[in-house]
Image (tube, rainbow, N blue to C red; front, top):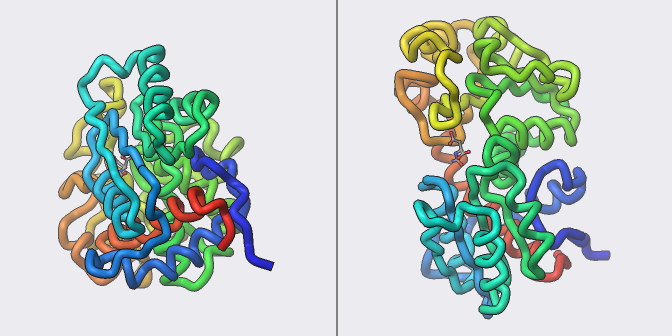
Length: 310
Ligand code: NCD
């Protein structure tokens, strides 16, 4: 019997089961050969309309959703949300309901307020896809990070993955932790304790490392996070130089663990959380993550919009 994807929305990893993620990975793998070619468009979403509404800056997530939708022959509309007065709750709901009357099939939304995609899906009948809500969830980023590791290691079970840096403000960290735990991976977090939520150990069930060296010696993979200065109150780190000195990922990690693999969701602040030589090294998967992002988002769009049969 064909596997079925039983969801109409993708708002958070916490709503997915392991079989759902495996189905997404297999579909993304099938799409990989097509994700860089504008010549061979697949017909899977012909006749469907996808709206992109980004209320926060974005390069790779927005472009990658747009390419994913186009590679599957969908119509794509970019909604210029940034800087408009739509950031106010009521008018946001007006807008998303207007889209419904225009016959939209899916809304891809990024918003600075945590929970917005959950709110919207209560009021519309089209599919809602979360492209990052506040510091809450970023499910397609976790899927593409997980997919990258699954392709490299052939499994996620038992892998030791450590998220390094600004875990407190990171939706990427929250979604990654949820996904990795679904597969029985071991998860660590490492950073200044002002940037690690106090619930990390008890509620998330992750290991907390205050020393980068210890984290690197423990882990198979580091997923390095950007300092989210736009979400930070002052005083959480003494200075960028000080942060880099203790938690910046430099080539010395290879001496501590010669087989370590490096992920980064981008955008990278070189010289702060990661040095350019590490990003360019054969240990890093950063460019591959970007390519995989298109395939994973093709899989998400097609499974949500094609009624689920695979
Ligand atoms: C992340 C995001 O926006 O949450 N980036 C991304 O989607 N590629 C991480 C970040 O902004 O640091």
